[in-house]
Length: 122
Image (tube, rainbow, N blue to C red; front, side, top):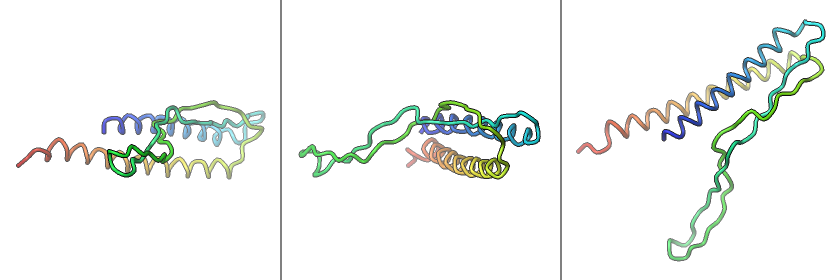
């Protein structure tokens, strides 16, 4: 559970960097010679998810894919010019990502609160 908060904190940091970059692009939309910045992120680490079939005695496993543990900033590159529509869409995407991460943080916090306060009581 604490790992989920660490992952969310890392995601919030990346979202903040993305929002700062988009804000800089929007602020410099009329600046002559300004080249727009774009950030690329990638998964930092992944874990394989498996499903055991037939109970513990049969030892059959089916792969379910992978689970990304956290994201990292891969690179920042420049574009020729700032497209205002693209930047506004990017801001809306960042706001939605922030909102979903905020809900996940609240759920994780509630689970930890319940585990620490209510588990083990008779």
